[in-house]
Image (cartoon, rainbow, N blue to C red):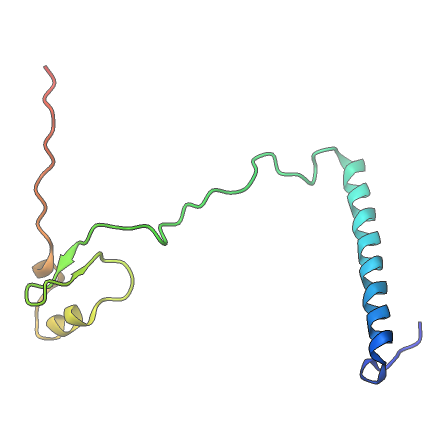
Amino acid sequence: MAKQNIASLSVDALLRLRDDIGSVLSQRAEALKKQLASLGADYGESRRGPKKRKSLAGRKVAPKYRDPKSNMTWAGRGARPVWMREAMKQGKKPEDFLIVRPAKKTRRKK
């Protein structure tokens, strides 16, 4: 195939070229699928299915730190809030902002 300057082609010629490329790609994909099938029936397929989302992104978390002045909270995820950064510059520690949670009640075994 002779080299063509794509910029000089007309819109109709570009559309034909796009269709030709698409058909060649689909033919090659079919050939590859046949090769995989000849290697083994389930060679190219995953038995497990889609992977489950294990990330904690987007899930709500109970707040871990509280600003005593403004009563704003922070869960400890993401960027440190401005109120905490400013207080830490003044010498406070993150432990000073921890929210005290009551201990969970546990059942005694008889």
